[in-house]
Length: 312
Ligand code: GDP
Image 1 (cartoon, helix red, strand yellow):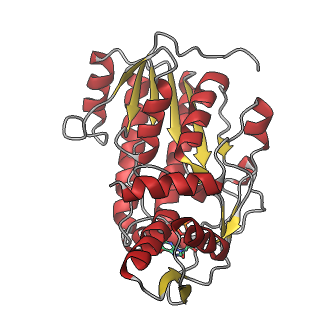
Image 2 (cartoon, rainbow, N blue to C red):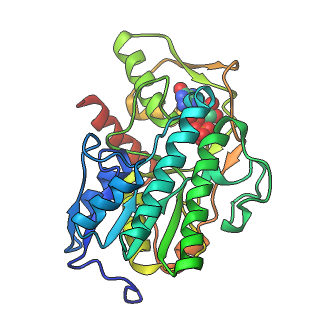
Image 3 (cartoon, rainbow, N blue to C red):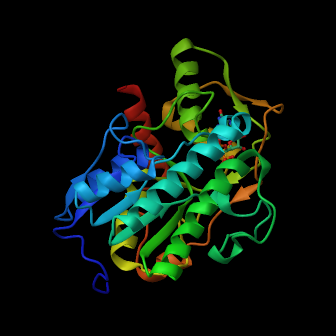
């Protein structure tokens, strides 16, 4: 592998959103980088307040910033609370990126999402598909806020020469996920539903939509590894997709979760619930070309996540 463009050794690194699934995985991953990791409890630092964030970054002499803070949720939460998802994520992105510039942060990585791509983007989705067509309506608000974050990184690079980069991870899952059925993403929801059905001795559990949509799933620990890799090896205005390069239908995913959990009943489909975008598989050739690939298989990742769920 080529030597790093940016060395994390000895850097003071702020992980924004350290309580979240990805932020906590980044903190764990940074332990072997020889850097000093700094986090801030939400009650002490409102990431929507640019002046306070600037003071925090300056006071703590932050060199490097991982922007993993966001208001996140599954298809139902996004479709039900678009105003909350848009305003909160816009404010977090604009305040934190602006503050990082004003506090002279050396390098920042903004975490986006593959929902920034058009609903009918070519599959697998190349980075160049951004802003080439209408978004998927169920997560348009979240996507718009994330697109602004990507564009802010680009704008600060163009106008001020800032080394601000962005990464677009595919659907993520792993330890510390949200298992609340009203706001969670599909994988933790299926784990919780299959487990509850097994414990109660139900004949079936309910899965939303038609089962035909296809999604790509990346374990949060693999994602954190890719983000640290990009921090060290990437410096460009172009954002980078982060994924496995493989997708699975929701029907096959439900069957896999059922098998890992050991539920012997059947699956019932609730067609009244939205399918969302038909397919979301990213083109990972740029990241692969740089020399990074995931190591956690979907089956092993689901098994580990299920162990995390039952020990909660
Ligand atoms: P999306 O990738 O933004 O659509 O986010 P989700 O992870 O919430 O949903 C992915 C797909 O899984 C959609 O087609 C959902 O309809 C489907 N799905 C099936 N059952 C569930 C469930 O119990 N919860 C969620 N969130 N999605 C489900």
